[in-house]
Image (cartoon, rainbow, N blue to C red; front, side):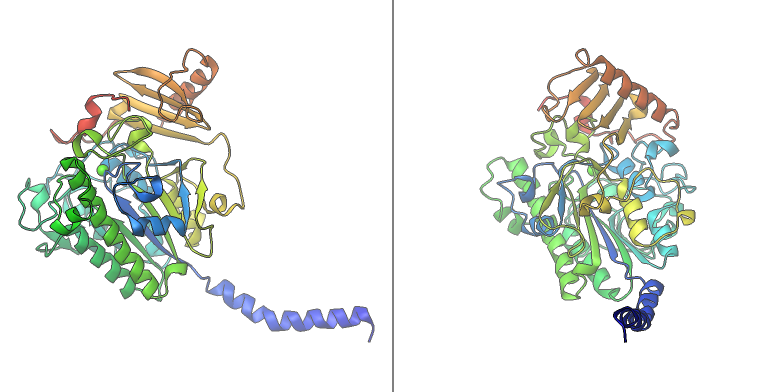
Length: 459
Ligand code: CA
C-alpha cells in the first residue's frame, strides 16, 4: 500500500468515525444558561474588584476573578426604569419613549414598557430557554406589563420601583406591596435581598439540565437603608452612619449573589452559565454616600458617574478569567450577546442597538474604534456621546462640554474650544441619532426624579 493510498484510507476511516459525532454536535448544540444580575444604585467604586477598601464583597470579587472586568461598562440611562427597558429590549429606550420612571398605578396602561417591544425573555423562550425573573420589575404596574406577560415563564419579586427590606418596616404604598409570585400575592418572609438570593438559587437548581435564562434584579443597595445587625457588624469600621448602612446593603447583596453562585457550582453549572453583572446606574452619592470615584457626577446625570458602572462578564472555560477589558461595552449588548449564544436566528430578533461582545472578550475580534454610544435624559435636557476616548456631555446647567477620558477620567477639563472638529462631529452624531427618538410617552411621578440630578456636582 503506497503512502498516498494509506493516507486516503486513514482519512476515510476518520470521516466515518467522526461524522456521526459532528452531526450530533450540530443537532444539539451545547447552549449555556444565561444569568443577568443587576444591582440598583451601586456606586462605581463600591466593590472590592473596583478598588473598594471598606466594604467586603468576596462573592462579587470571585465572580470578577473568574471572568472579565469591563472597566468601561455603561448602562443606557442614568436611572432605574429606562435602563431596565433598554436592557430587556436591547434597544435604546428613547426610540420608544421609555425615558422616565413609571408611576406606581395598576390602572395606568401607559406608564410601562410598551407592549409592541420584543423582549429578551420572549426571544429566548422561542429558542427553547426556560425564562425567569426574580426581583425588581419597575417596567409598569398595570397587569398587562406583568413579567409573565412579557416573556418570563416564572416571576417572583416586587413589581414597583423599590421596596422595604424588612417585612415589618414602613414605607410608601409602592414600597410595601406584597411579593408577587406569578401574579399571586404573598407576604415578604424575611430580609428582602436574602429572599431574592434564595429564589435565584432555587431557580438555577430547579432548571438544571435544560437551558435557562434568569434575570435577577436586586433593589439593593437602593435606599431605604434598612439592614440587619449582622450586616452592620461586618462594616462597623465605617464611621459615617449613612455609608455604614449603605455598605450593609451592599454586603447583603454580595451574600445573596454568593448563594446563587454556590447553587451554580453545586449543580455543576458554573462552566455552562454565562453571567453578566452590572448596576442599573451610578450611585446617588448625596443620598446614600455611595462612591463613584474617580468619576464625576452621580445617578441622574450623563456624566460618567451616572452611567459608567461596575460590569463583569463571566463564563469560565470560554472567556478569559481575571482580565480587564477597557473598550466601552453597553447594557444594550446583553440582548445581542445572549441571543447569539442561544442560537437565535436573525429573522427572530428585533432590530438591536447592541452587539455580541463575546468575540471581543475572548480576543477573537477587536471592537471598532469608532463605536458610538449615546445617552439622552429628560427628553434631551441632558445627553452624552462616547466615541473612542472622547465624550461629549450636554447639560442644562453646564452647557455642552467635550472631555478626553483617556487623560481626564474625571471629566474636569472641557476641550470643546480646543477640539472644535471633534466637538462638531460628536454633536452631529448625536443629532443624527436623536432624529430616530421620540418624546417620552410618560412622565416620572412627582418626587421620583433622582435627587442627584438637581446639581451637577464635580467629584
Ligand atoms: Ca437604580
